[in-house]
Every structure is written in C-alpha cells, then in structure tokens.
Length: 130
Image (cartoon, rainbow, N blue to C red; front, side, top):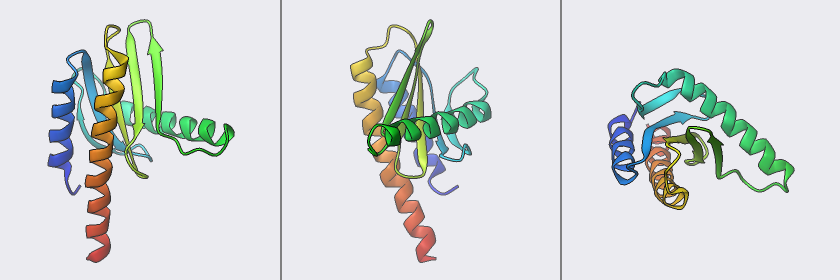
C-alpha cells in the first residue's frame, strides 16, 4: 500500500507521545490492515473489530441526528480502546491502559488521525491521477 511506511512512522510517533498506550493500528473502514504497532495483539482481528466499531459509531452518529462519525471510546476493566475516523476510508485504533489521561489520548489521536487522513487522501489522489 502507498504510504505504508509513513503510516507506520506516524503510529510510532503516536505511541511515543502516549506512554500509557499499549498499541495502535490503522485499517481501512472495510477492516483491511494498513499498519500496526500493537505487540501481543492479533492485528488482523483488531482491524476487523475496528471496522465493525466504526460501523456502529457511524450508525449511532446517524441516529443521533446525521452528524458524521468522529470517534468512539470503549472503557473496560483493564483499559481503553479508542477508534478515530481518519478521513472517509481509514480508522485509527488506540489501545491504552486504565491510567491513561483520556484528554491527552483524544488530543494526540485526533492529531494523528488528521495527519493520516491527509496522507491517505493524498494517496487516493495519486491513484486517480495515474
């Protein structure tokens, strides 16, 4: 995939900015893995679940008044899973421990998702020009 190295680099930078994050993943909205930095996590399974979570978030956003989906946060006993729309075709997933600063998680992941959207939208433009 075009820009895979840049996506992987951004995921690494996001992990560095969030010391309590345990993994990050980028996938298409269809659940195809783009890149990941999530040791001890089955990446393809997480990509498929991220796609499903994105779909649920999209449906919930539509039901609440037609607003576009931006993010979904799931809190469990042992931490968080956060999904962020990264443009119209990509999902950024962040796994984090229970002690993460959720405000900082959102701030950093929103920055990364905006960068990924820009990067991948550019890749789509490159394919259309070919």
